[in-house]
Amino acid sequence: MRTVNKKTMTIVGVLAVVVVLFCAAFQIASENQANAEYAREQDDALTHDVTPIAQLGPISLGDNNGVRELFGALPLHSVDRKYEIDAEHESLTINYLEVVGDIGVDDVWRDLIYNSVASMASIPNLSDITYNFVGDGYSFTREEIEDVFGKRLPDLLASSGEWQTEVRSRLASQKFCQQYAKREELDGIAPPA
Figure 1 (cartoon, rainbow, N blue to C red):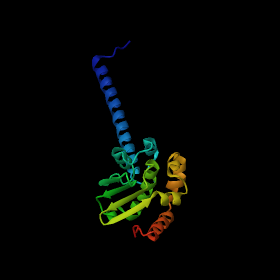
Figure 2 (cartoon, rainbow, N blue to C red; figure 1 turned 135 degrees about the horizontal axis):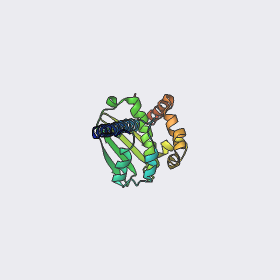
Figure 3 (spheres, helix red, strand yellow; figure 1 turned 180 degrees about the vertical axis):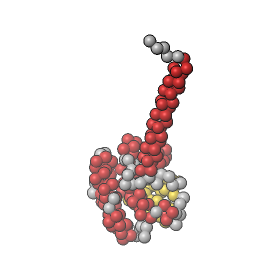
Figure 4 (tube, rainbow, N blue to C red; figure 1 turned 90 degrees about the horizontal axis):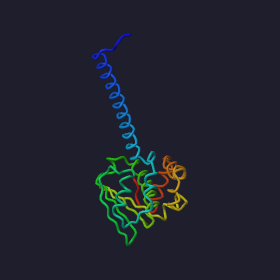
């Protein structure tokens, strides 16, 4: 019977450690890539995962941290912004510190509709929201959003399937976004041209 010497055992042990480390590094790289892809998806209304928003539960407009957390999880979260909360008048103004054209007009308009639906579904006492950018401003009211989507907004957020059907699939249609923009223009609010 042949015995394995100490040198061979050491080589086998080192090789085993190298294989384990290689597998761990590959796993970490794969997870990092998946996390980066998920993060990119969260900045687009068409791929955003609404589940974390729904899990926040109802937020009071007077809850500054809750409002900040909500908008930190919605599309446009990577754009620097400041908030003006008027709980007495149930309104919120978000002042973005960038020009719409630098972000992309069509994407911004879609994201603003999406963020308005999500925020009004999450904040029961939010009646109107204004988004100001450098040189541009857009406003939405709960009444018009509910009229366009035909439902109470919290009901849309209650089911990811309903959110997909009623909100995201509509926003995927350029025609829907253009019609919504024209409607806003008729109401005196100039959407992106």
